[in-house]
Length: 161
Length: 161
DNA sequence: AGCTACTTCTTGAAGCTTCAATAAACTGAC
DNA sequence: GTCAGTTTATTGAAGCTTCAAGAAGTAGCT
Image (cartoon, rainbow over all chains, first blue to last red):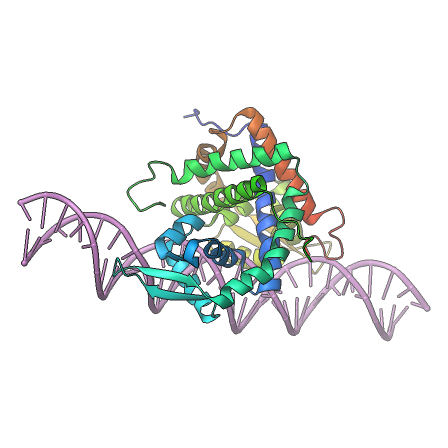
């Protein structure tokens, strides 16, 4: 059967460019944060997410959903960050299966200390190079892609897969 | 000092959306390929890159540069794929330090077998959801970001850092 | 030739992620 | 209340990536 639809040339070019950009960017940010904060980008994202939340705490599953990672990955990550003294687990009052992750004061300080460098890196890599219009386009395109992936009906398992 | 430039609200929104999209997409494609081809996305990208090259072979460093990964990572990956019989190392005639990675027939067949499923996944996740204009925008934005990262002068080391 | 500096690639260990299996608790239907 | 089915979170092993170090070859300079 030859009904296979391959990518057009423009699509191929876009896909290659996108792959390269994301590969380089991840690598770059991981290095920046590993150097300045001693943790990979995703771990920083966890602390950062918690720092913006009322009570600086969140249920495990909620944190996993917001950051788009699996519960297992989060569980390992939290253990590591707990070892650093930046996070703490508390049992959830309303659901005895649940755990609440709490950002410690040390963890909050760490975010405050490292956020400027991280923001600089992100801006230098992305937003300083894009027009306002491109930034808006990037946001919209990203939303479209993200929406297609956990989709309104990505259903039978909690939220991913 | 309060000269710190944080992200504007629009930039923050774009950054969050972008992060979520790329996190979900990587995860999705890794799963798709792990299921259908028994390898992560980056490994598939290596085979695929080789399959499009004259002679289906390339120097290690060249392959690392094209796929934007470190030599070390490539070295481990090639060892694994060599174990699968999809790749083979040959010593380079012109430079006795060098290695040439060659895609085996089995490796080529594997690409041919799994390419349609992978392309479908990429199209379903991205290009079927974007207008032609958005595809073009994504390509341009990606190029801008990628260019900033290995930059024309990202110099003293081969290509990264 | 000999020397220094650099490039190519590999290695092993440590750290991170995935996957499948598990324990424990909740839910709803009976 | 109880049972089956679901949800929450964790665990350990296997696989992948990063990092620093190192072996081997090249290049240029004297």
